[in-house]
Length: 188
Image 1: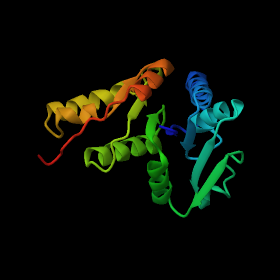
Image 2: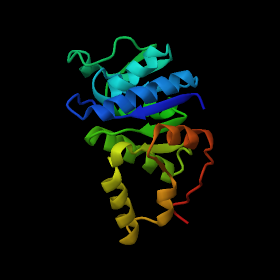
Image 3: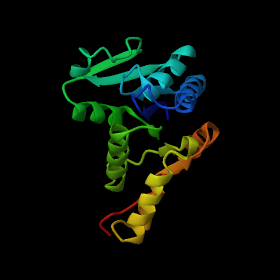
C-alpha cells in the first residue's frame, strides 16, 4: 500500500480534538512513507491532515472539482493537484488511486464518500481496506445504524466485515498493516 485516501470534514468550527487528530494522522502517514489522497481542501479535517503531511515533507495528492477554485478553499501546496469537472469525477479518481481509505470525522460529504466506497466493496469493485477512524466515538451512532440495518435484514451481517473501526491513530496503522481482504458476495 502506498496511497491512503483520507476522507473528512471541511469545517473549521469543529472541536479542536478532531483537527489535532487529523493533523497527527497526516504526520504519521508521511513518516511511514504513505502518500495521502484527499479532497484538496485547506480547511477542517482535510486541511489539518494535509498540514500534517506537509510538515513531514510527505506526498500530498489533492483532487477537486473546478468550481472550488473560485471559492478559494483549495490547498495550493499539494504535491499533485488534480482538477475535475464534477464531484463524481473527483471521487472516481480518489477511489482509483487509493490503496486504502481512512474515514475521519466529517459531515454529509464524508458520509457519502464512506457509503460509496463500502458499496463498491460490497459489489466487489475493489477489496481495499476501509478504516473508520472513530475519534472520540464520533461514528458510534452510524455504527449502531449499521448494526440495526443487519438486525432489520436490510443488509447481511457480513457487510460489517467490509470495514474496520479504529479508535486511535495506532489502531489505524495496525489495521492498515495487517489488512486481509474479506470477500463478500452480495448475490450468493
